[in-house]
Amino acid sequence: MSLAREELADRVRDLLPPNAIVREKRMFGGIAFILNGNMLVCPVKDGSMMVRVGKEGMTEALEHGAEQMTMGERTMAGFVIVTGDMVEDEDSLAAWIDRARRFVETLPAQ
Image: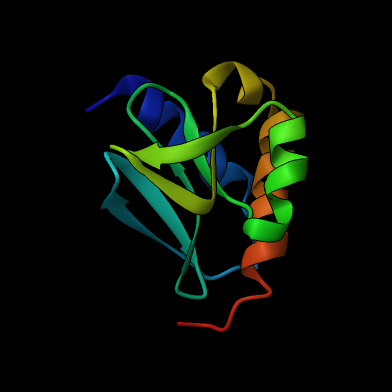
């Protein structure tokens, strides 16, 4: 297991809203945090984090330094990657989690 991924996952757990019902699932080489049946964020092995921002949130996320998420040659619409440097402090990590939460809460529960 990647120490960077596990440390980031621990930090995400600490920042999730206390009343939120979030489950965890191993996927994409990381630990996906799922809110109401929809993926929120997913720390991955290199210490970066996949963040679900939705198509409408892409421009803002990219302006804040995120990169478009790709898997192989496929672009993942509505998902970005933020590097470990971008979530080094708790305020920055909390802001990315909040950005994802705001989008995911607009989706129907799964």
